[in-house]
Length: 349
Image (cartoon, rainbow, N blue to C red; front, side, top):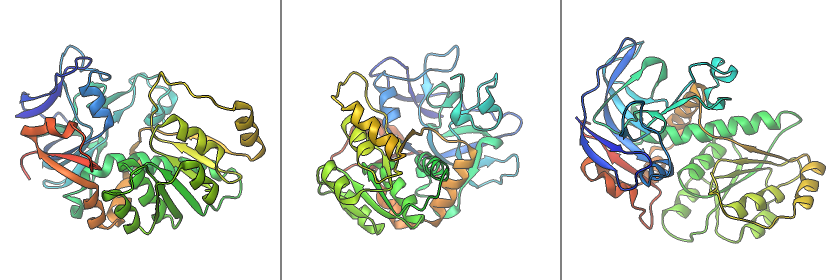
């Protein structure tokens, strides 16, 4: 079969080549790949900045935003079921969090991840997955189900926001999402599903993003962040850019008892001048909270599956701005001017 592989730490090693067909073990599904989403992590691995091959191997099968159909069922799944595979696996020790099923909160870093860390990903014509780490999707999501993994990230973020907020009376009304990439737009989707007044801030003024936000019933902004924050005073900020200056502006610009959830990863090596005393004073005196959120466990996958099943299919389709075949997968790693989500179509569906 064909697969999208890379040599971690080696820039320019991205390749579509032949690998052995997988054989499902006990309790595993054999799945025919349908599509694969491409995200910033995949691009970092392709640039040689990140990633680990399976032990004893040089190449890693890339891809963690999966979508496929079951060929050989197991564990309550049926042939033809539309499924995605969970990305992370608990560490083998395990730590207390992994032992409790909260492997997204692994304490010792010995977890593994499909397509990222020491386990082959889902970027192949066929793949296997343990039935316990597969999640069934509504059949209506056959064209957009590869959005499941990024939706799990924001499902976890909203869960964490809710848990933090409920340390006291908590009825948020207004949320600002910074960044209108896939994570930001999906965070906005879940915000509207919660009945909140959702605002999205991004630097572009045209292209598909403003229309996607408007179609949610949310409000799009491209003014300077300090102006937007001053006008809105949001109860919640979901930060999805990783831009350092935006992070600190968000921390200083919420309403009292505000919660800022960071989902974007900032690049290292950049310095900012921050009035740490003023920021600390505001956080303490207003009972504000800043939390980071990354990855997802099985609970978040099921929450994401429910959220996608409730979403408008036309809107979800609008997030996918380019589809390329597996044979031209390298094109998915070159950013287009109006790209939101780029998808690699795998043969067989």
